[in-house]
Length: 440
Picture 1 (cartoon, rainbow, N blue to C red):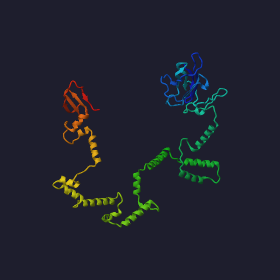
Picture 2: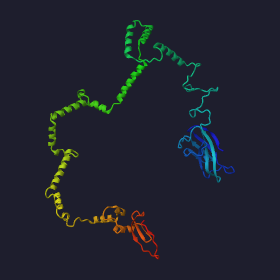
Picture 3: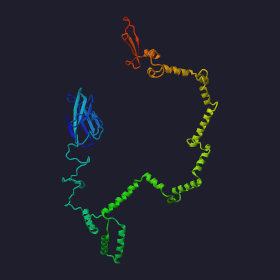
Picture 4: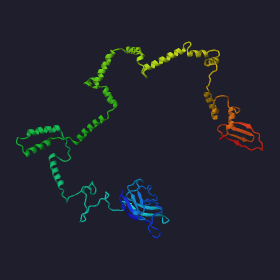
């Protein structure tokens, strides 16, 4: 039976002592410590992580007295420790006095027992010597209800109420929105000055002020909202300028409007005037003639039209040299056009034809020897595939063969039952029987 040790606050730390004893009651240490598991409520699944659980054996060097601490703020197993739940610490698979022991150590809860508990951990209720509880007037009941302190005089509040009544009597009914209209106030002040007698009295001043407030026509709430909405609309329009709109406005602006010294408008206009002046009103045909007559030697930058034209010219000159009588292309065509073209080509390349070097011949031989039979069978070169060929002979050497009765079947590269060819077999009962040969 586990021992209930108390109700703890969220994120606090639980500390407890427990003991291990021999069969006769003597304090002994654990031969095998086992593990301390934490269970939540009636669940049969313990906390998945041991983080935050500290089991100290033989605490303070006292044999058989152990200390367990559980850090409830450790959230490695997310959401496991939560208010309103009971928890159980259980020792599992320990060896004590030669016996395997599973034993509940303690039970505790997290904010699941106490009827009254402070909102902030460690705080206490303020109780006077006569048993009266202190009350926080800023945290009484529902904050939306009126707190009636009819039996209590709050001096500051009564002073404010008196001043408020006086102000309301002077400026009009409560709830009227006042907006400073400088023009109207200025006019009223001028009128007020003309009415102020040489000898001022408080009564005269109050009377004139009352008259001025009566004459003042403040804007209504609806009028204020309308003006505010208009300003917000203008601001929103400024915040939503498009790139195309700004660019169009800039390019469509008259240069005369931007001719101040050191401005970009003046710089563009000046450079444009200079460019027009340098062209001198030349026609498009005259400009084209000037471009076509320009020497390419000064325009050979990589990637430019001049460089591309120069490269084309070099290649064209080379082709013209090859095509002329006695040129390389002309000689080749003359040889191919003779009555004995093959002999002419051999004459052109040499009496022995194309001679391969030893490394080249080795590459050809290696390519032939390493060629896959499936690739050879799928090719379209040479004669129709026949079993009586070098391909058929090689197939018999490496592919699957099988004997059925007096027929030896040689299969193709799939070894899946398609015969590439067959041979008649003569058998001898005295010989060692062979039923199949299959290449690994």
